[in-house]
Length: 515
Image 1 (cartoon, rainbow, N blue to C red):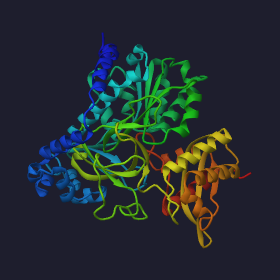
Image 2 (spheres, rainbow, N blue to C red):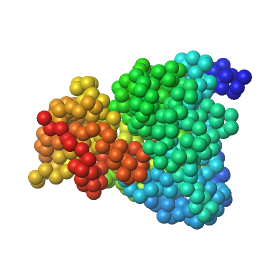
Image 3 (cartoon, rainbow, N blue to C red):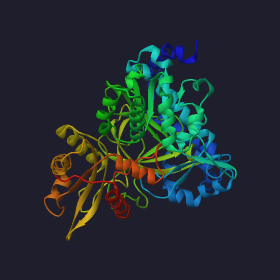
Image 4 (cartoon, rainbow, N blue to C red):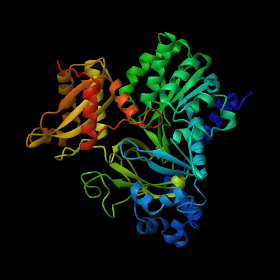
């Protein structure tokens, strides 16, 4: 009997014990910070900020927040992490960094080099194991745990440089799959090593009938493209024709609702969906209760969290962090407030008070359950409308419902309109809808969910502009940028320069519909 054959009963027993034991979030976080400071004390960063003295302080958390400055990627890299690329040891964490995750997020900037340590890989594996221990709460049949797991990430063919390797974080993780899990992991190692995304998907499609898949995981856009390719390759009605045991999809990184309709058409029936918060910097949260849209923060697995109120006191109009922002601990947060996330962690080769760029909101503070509401850089407020990605997702979802369409991709930017500004949208829609109808429904919904937007639309913010295009155009753009598959996501909000390039690309590759 394999490990996964025994998993359901063992997980259920362990899950019951965990449910009975409800640790104090504040104490969990204090213990986590203490362990981090102790482990990193011998590093150059730990010596510079005198972690040994902080460990002796009766107000360790408060002194840590006061003495160590907040960092974004640029400041952390310029001051510290650049040395790890030169194979310097003990920079901001103990030891030498062997792997670097290349991540540009959705900003379109040059690739970031996120240090990936052995400690980071252990933390992520531990988070994944805890998530799987919790799965019996979702009502999965015991036999599903022995089925294959389709994981669509980056290539495991990492780029070797002097003393280290570069690649997508998902590819780095896939290259380190435990031996006991490899028989269940799909695609196999040979396919995972293929660099070219289209070639890899071709091989996945060819081999798909040989696998009995029960779970899928990956960025929704790439999983959807893979399912479409498999169905087309074998002339199937739905993916159920070859994977009748497909039951659960684990997603994260983007708002899933725009993809849900398309997924259920491809699969042939509803799946069990589980949301995860997995970033290039670590595994932070996962959904623990079915029929909720929230995720529980992992508070005792190597990450100390701080929460900066996402407002004009702490961020400028471009979403950049101001000096000496107000940072709160888990004890001080409130429900219903948007916070930018700061992390201090062994992941990333030692990240200290590091702004990862996401905004979150506590839905249930007692359970430490959150939702992701957007990005610090990905919102529109050209004249005070404060339009968040969460607002945008609500608007797009309303369009889908009202017009009975699927909108897997969209992007928007602020553009000049005479002496004023407007928001210009490109919306990937299946089937193609009437642009004016989309504009009307979207604009009204945004007014309904955001009072600031409604106010500005009645004054200085001009009528929004909407162009409906085929979703494939978005994927062709990603291919041109070299960002197919893995953890790559299309930017929901573009800056002026990005948007100019995007519009030129669209004009060359599509015919918009304006009926």
